[in-house]
Image 1 (cartoon, one colour):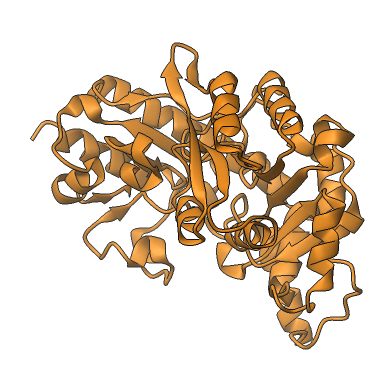
Image 2 (spheres, rainbow, N blue to C red; image 1 turned 90 degrees about the vertical axis):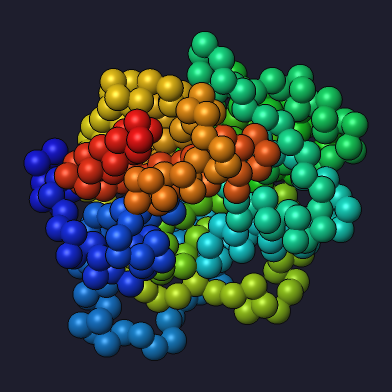
Length: 389
């Protein structure tokens, strides 16, 4: 549905009136293309669901059973979209994915323990591991003729050397946009089983996968890996509702479920009424909106690729297979210091600094293209012009 005003023509005054971090923090003279928020209006099914709650005046104590109110909607979506028979009784609700990671690490690891993950990686995850006193075991994605790839043998050697028992798997991957294939996922699962590991599988970008690529939940590969996997996800990324603070975890290990359930019920927080209403509406009624969104994002992704190839060929860029984030290799530009700082100063565009994603991100910047064509065109024009100053 390219041609929808919700996606195709955003007004700058409307965007700059937002109170969120994306448009407010950089200041009024920069164009933001950094934090992973989209610029589009809220999806109509979510607006309707939140309006219904407010119309009813229904912000009192919710009448939820002991099971997560999102257990059935999550299981239904996994079954219908990914052919995965997720178990509703294994679902627990949280405020967001970072909280889930912190809770799981707190319950299953100790300071000094190792956590393996692909690098570069999402900065809050890297900071969490460091601030909790855990050790990061990096398995880098490397650029090849086939795109971004990782070496499973290298991952296994690193895991074995460190005695690592926890893997944080981000798939689709942030920031490269890679969607792991079935072969790659089976290789990861084999390593996990051989080394008696727990997997925390961040699959929040799954719904933003571009055909012909296909997201495969790690836990769907079979019962053995499912018993070792904590799948974490949320509607907040796909439907741009991060401020509602609502996420779910499908917890495979019975021992971890038991330990969670032994703690006081509110120790790790609880879902909120508006977050549950929005998430349920998104998963049950948002697929038409999502299909139109993916068309817009795919066109934007292609615009980024074609513009950079034509005007700034020195920036190495592989179009992402999922997400609305482009990982830009700026090393050939010869910029001293952080490319994001250079483009902030010279182009007045705010990008995410590559170094925040780990050492493998030095010389890179991440660009968020989830905006309307008029805004994206200006962002890309500013970047291209700045490289020729």
